[in-house]
Image (cartoon, rainbow, N blue to C red; front, top):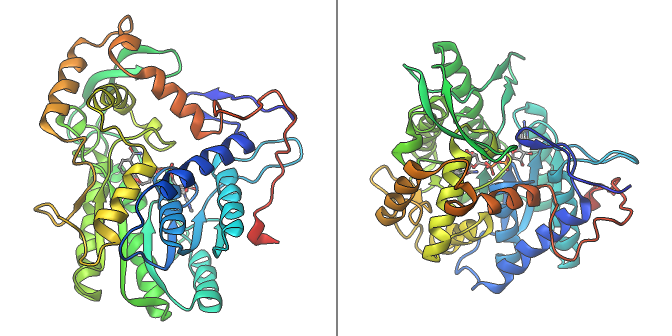
Length: 396
Ligand code: NAI
């Protein structure tokens, strides 16, 4: 079939298999062009491995350090006349490249929150790898079914305490408008913590340890975001921020149980991903941030961020280069530099629909959003017939 983008609000309901493969190959080529990490993990489990930060977290240890990887994700396979999701095609492309490079790679498509998924992964580690020495937790999900009670929890992206009004970008129309979001109820706050907090991360690490498949000295990392005060009311001080605080509490508990240096929270840069496109206000901030960081010459995407995470923090001889006062890894350091934030804040005051493409990098925002789904990549013939029905090599 001929596959074109079909955008509905902040998602694209189609994905291009060859475009996604080209995207994965570009990321692999970047990693291969970088210095190899000094002390890379050898057996890596990535939970949320198919898109965004998680995909990059699978590519970096595999192609930068020769690691065997197991990836867990929730994606839609393609059918004869229907495209699958981008994460499905990314994972097919990743596995094909890993196979070609002689690297072990297995993937599990299903609900990472479930007990069954944890058991399947544990059984596979036992059978194929023995143990894992690095676990990256990169889930972004709007809902979670509690594996023990069957109750379904939904997360919300809302402020806490009072309504929040701010400039906003309608990414579909390219218009700067404003948005007012009513505060979350106590129940919505608790539910968001249940979905995006640290409980499931801890359940994974405890399950791996109980099954004897967590290597001595293994490291685990979960991702977080802080950002500037412009977005605090909706992010850091909002429902998602409360969930991220809970992730930090989980890291502290894991360190207490398994020893200091076992669990880290890494605070990453704001980037265009499927998850971040859904957050109000953030796409406008990202469009301005890209403009400023590109001008400064230190803009990074997921793959550059995660390469730095491994090379400077996770895969060194001596552990993370530096932690902040709360014990977190900060690869958002360049985003948070005072001159970058001052420049973004100045542009924030000025930005309107009329000057959007001139003073922000909305053009890149749009093209990066399309690239997430495999559209707009060089060397891909989008007018050609494409087979959407691809299988994961490890499934055969
Ligand atoms: P994403 O939407 O690109 O990736 C989410 C991943 O989770 C995908 O692999 C998806 O298949 C998987 N997933 C979702 N529900 C699942 C389920 N029930 N079972 C198994 N897999 C499931 O998101 P992104 O942006 O890469 O986010 C990953 C983490 O990074 C999140 O914790 C997010 O808060 C954090 N982060 C993101 C930033 C950004 O600007 N995008 C900035 C800083 C941190």
